[in-house]
Image 1 (cartoon, rainbow, N blue to C red):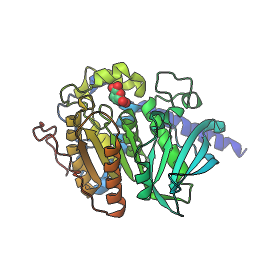
Image 2: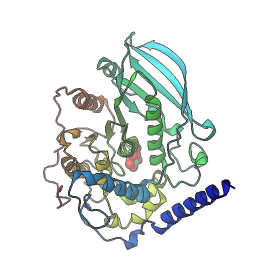
Image 3: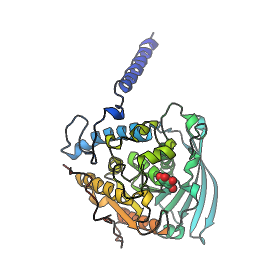
Image 4: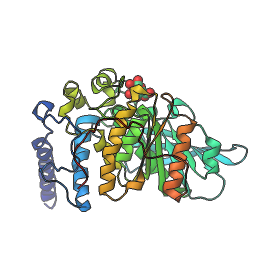
Length: 387
Ligand code: GTR
């Protein structure tokens, strides 16, 4: 007898939650207004503009649902059953560090597997961490320097989580059927699982976890840092279109929404396709995504010779993002740094990240210019200001 009301209540909750998601689908692109400039991140969907910092959380939720709904697709909840095994340890870098290799297992029946390698400085810690999922592209540079500055370098290969291809029958996809996520969202979800793991280790300083990635890996870390508030510092490098580059404003020769949707449709939610000829109907631009990182630390690193990566359109996103950091009283947490040269994640980029992390985490001074003004003659992409 006592079971019946419980069953009824569960059924009712299910019906209500289904109705809620069905009743409020995001309108198709054709029903959205044309907005030629960057949309105003402080304007609530109700039409009311924010006035106090306390209202930001509610707006943040709206922005997340727009970004996931139209751009990257939705992710499953955290699995909460992650286990790990240490498979080997080895002294390395002339005895200044230990390389520890782990196997992580999580998700339904522990079917998701992820290998992680940690390069750990000597000593007890806890140490701050630089985490990257770009292991598929080889080892990070500056390992001696990372250790010398007292950071753990944690590396994994995001393509273990999901392939960099349209294939949907491997990686996490078959384990979580029914999600509209593309690879960027799946990889970002993988970053959060890596953080689940790091948080379990006593040698890790949980309040000082930084993430970095390059290009498609940069788009990934920006999404991961936007959503996962345990991440203290986010550093997308040359992330361009679908990362910190604007969809609406481009420098000459930069990648467009139409082009990325044609060549890499599987990186995104299928919903993004409807905007290829209607960019100005997007109810956001990428400053909405970068704003989700605020008030946590965000460093955009870009290369002036990387035309395809839209360095000037990234500066516009940075300038718009500044308004959110100003609104939240966290301007010193936002940085943008440019170097001459081509599309790459090189030692200079890593050194800039280490300087920025030392500054954010330990208030150390640095020689870098993190004020991001490399294109003085760019058009103004927005007319609004922080309330
Ligand atoms: C390009 C792609 C870019 C960028 C790059 C990369 O082909 O158009 O958006 O992600 O690949 O990941 O190296």
